[in-house]
Length: 143
Image (cartoon, rainbow, N blue to C red; front, side, top):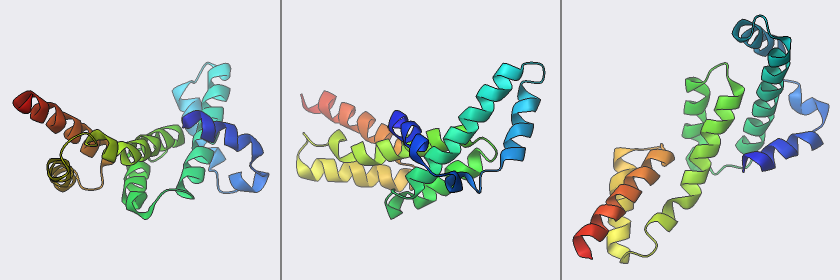
């Protein structure tokens, strides 16, 4: 999915980057790569792409992921590439949750999903991991 969003930024109008905090991103990249101008440029490109990816995902994610998006922004305050990676990970997990239990009896699968959702509210990557672990355990006990 990351490739899809990164390719998407090529087609975004300049106005899509109007809110991009270019000076803060530049300061961050210069601080991280003080003596390496090529890496500063690469870092700035990654930050700009991450910002565009994150904004593009924000416009398409279901409401259930809004808390996850806020958490990604808070966790990676000045790192737009990591914000995008974090949200992409949450989105992929959210979309794959049902598949994790798809071959289990309905009541068992629903119970696993409900328990993991209670334990990891609004963290879909952890819900998916939790579900995978529970499915593995159920299979070991029942096969």
